[in-house]
Length: 176
Image (cartoon, rainbow, N blue to C red; front, side):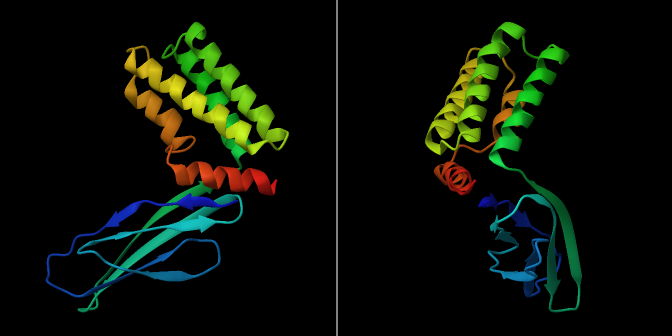
């Protein structure tokens, strides 16, 4: 799949201890030691398969203290994620957050992306998904869509729009 999980992790500890951090990404590879930058560390992992994974970050100090946090990561295929976007778009119309007139071109663009995905055309699919993001951004800039709603559509449901995300999507599509 090549789906990248990349949050920033941070912790608190009142003492001036020495800490170690590890992350188990839930895909069977086991815990991975992390480099600390003060009381934070970057988490980056590439998932090779679709599925739901329980990620566990653990921090230990030199006094024997330990803390951990968990998060569930769901890795979808590009096709699954695009279908979820179409469903989310329908929910926005049903809730009144977006009119049918404004949602229609977004839906058409997502449908075009989905067709390109299904026919194994990664570049055309990435272009359609980029066009979708541009359309959503235009709605926000014109005041026709709330920023939080757009952010949910673009970042949480699809990609952050970074070059690496599109590269990962293209790799995933090419492997279909």
